[in-house]
Image (cartoon, rainbow, N blue to C red):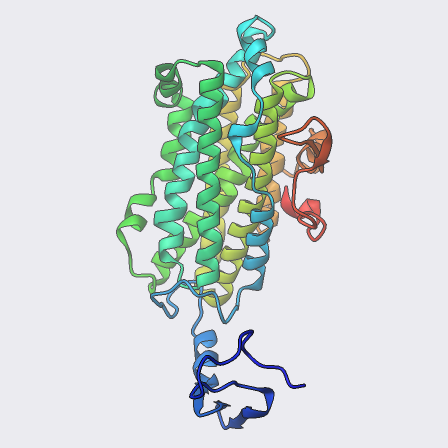
Length: 390
């Protein structure tokens, strides 16, 4: 018995039941013609090939629809799927124990200061990242799959902002004081001004056919994903996860663990977009521009060290200022190495080797139960080497 294309029979004598026998496809040069009963459909494969050839990171073919087909940047789509597999929701993380520790004097003044600085800084920094990815990076990309992955990046920044609101509400932290943390502390002001100083021009739209402007765009990607997310976020993450490791503020620690896992994907996506941009526009990658990026990272490192000294003016239990300063240098060199740029400090050893295990710990308490389960969809970690992510 031949199969049909419809699960139900024709409703009238005039209806045509299409069977395998009355459907045919034939090649006619660049066209494929489908004959389905009395109807024929002529499909132009050359147009699809032209669409693929016209895909570029910037200055490529633009279309009204966000259609990723034909897929050219396969790695971006893989990273997008990895980001999606790591999805998490802040509201379902239990903050009861954190609230008890916060309000019963279980934390030292130094430990409370670290939490307050973390909430204050990231409440501004996550917004800077989200706004910059949306208005500087995603707006200027022309390949749909790159835009698609960048939109997921933006969505995750919103989740991170949501997590900070969950922390503030759970601990009943004074909102005015949170605002003051990022508006009045000089090291935070300097970090934010440093990363945003070139963004207004790119938000207004510039001619990306000119080499100098392409370099500005490349520097913006580098600044947001490799300097800010890849270097300037990590020391404070490590401080909070050090508290988590001591069984203090474990709800916040869990959120920061998931956030850091997200940031790892953002770093990887930014590096991939940047390398593809350079491959398609080799005029960007001059010796002078490479040196400019290294100096940009150097400035970012010095500002981050100043911030670390403000977050941890004195050594605490299980935390020394010197280790965190070394960690800043270690991460900066890793980001530079990922783009074949020369190291700044030559630090080879991660002072927080345990942090790798924390970030990639696959067993987490289920949000809705007390039993331990996988908090990731199947296969979301197994296809990527850990060293490529962190």
